[in-house]
Amino acid sequence: MSRGGRASAGRRAGGGGGIRFEARELLDLAVAWVALGVAFVVFFGGPGVIGSTALPELFALSMATAGVGFLLHELAHKVVATRFGQVAHFRADYSMLFLAVAGAFAGILFAAPGAVYHRGRITARENGLIALAGPVTNLLLAAIFTPPAFLASGFVADVGDFGLTINLLLAGFNMIPFGPLDGRTVFAWSKVVFVLAFVPSAALAALALVRFGFGI
Image (cartoon, rainbow, N blue to C red; front, side, top):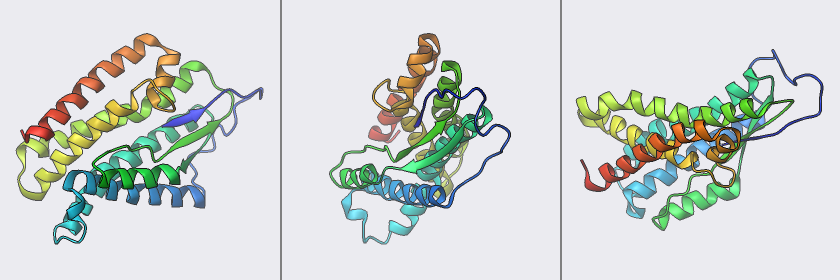
């Protein structure tokens, strides 16, 4: 997710400064990455996975798929925001991270770990493109994970399968036009772009749920 708005400054803030990370931002990214890794392991493996011999492998699998999907989603927001001259940084929402882990134990998956906040002079189009960058990144990752999901075997196939499923779900979820999700910002900018992005994202997310549910 990304959150930003207009500023009254006459020129863009942070333009040409490149991508920089604060110490707190790196900590927030690391904590969110690990928390989501745990949440996805518990949600897909069940509460009984904690303490099982399969936990290390499943956690590595989750970090390499769900964790990477989240991390690159947020970094895409930051990169595009910085490209448009914004001062941008990720902030974890620790209450939502706790809810994600607790919800996973109850069989509910709700991944809203935080957001990239940006400030500076910006147009509605630029704000929409910043928001769109995250879901599009997840769709690109899903495409990368597709070949090993269907062509490989063993752990590599598991990485591909899980990476494909998770990234399609992340793209579809974040394109919902509600609350702080990316879809709302894209919808506010352009209804046409929203439809072009939301329809395939939602359809692919639904297929991913069906495929996971029926093990196909």
